[in-house]
Amino acid sequence: MGSLCGLVLVLMWTLGVNGKDVSSLISRSMFEKLLKHRNDDICPARGFYTYEAFINAAKSFRAFGTSGNRDTRKREIAAFLAQTSHETTGLPDGPYAWGYCFKEEQNPTDYCVPDPEWPCVPNKNYHGRGPIQISYNFNYGPAGKAIRSNLLKNPSLVASNPTISFKTALWFWMTPQSLKPSSHDVITGVWKPSAADSAAGRVPGYGVVTNIINGIECGIGSTPGGEGRIGFYKRYCSIFGISPGKNLDCYSQKPFGG
Image 1: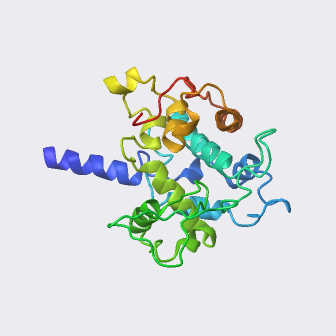
Image 2: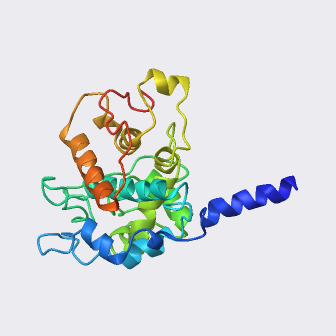
């Protein structure tokens, strides 16, 4: 019976608690309402970030948006879209409605660092691309392995294939990073702070997600970046009809590893 229970738990994690994908919580019309300006002429990524690509990519990460109760599942989708909207916003945040305007980093530099496991391919650039603006060879490599696409050799796929683009962002969201929990575990309430986390001010809530994604914004009080991430999140939670929860900022948190 023990092994059977273990198998059931694995299947629940793989398929999601309710066996459904995120389309049961976010319809096409809601997606358009959340990201309403992404296809405007002013946005370089217009036409790229489609609802179909988002839903198809999410099917490769079945625990995304399917873990916990209904409000928790909605909160995770809102948090993911908020963080990625801030990463790709096309104008100063304003009404927090200009997310997903860019698919590539503006004015990129060389993001290749020596790494024996994920060596850079000559003449390839690993600058920020996609919803999470994935960058560096040590992220492109494992992300590509996870989604079964050689992104070290073909990093441009993240800016040319919308499903792959969303998959890289979801991989980063679902995967614990060095010294950091996954954003998924934080926003769904699975992560519990250690004694070191508590001493560093890292408490459960959306603020820790920001700390995971861009810790340099944390521990220095209010910043435009931090305010932008929170602004998007509050707007999206309002559209979903849910509370954003507590501890939305990381202003008093030390970055992970700091």
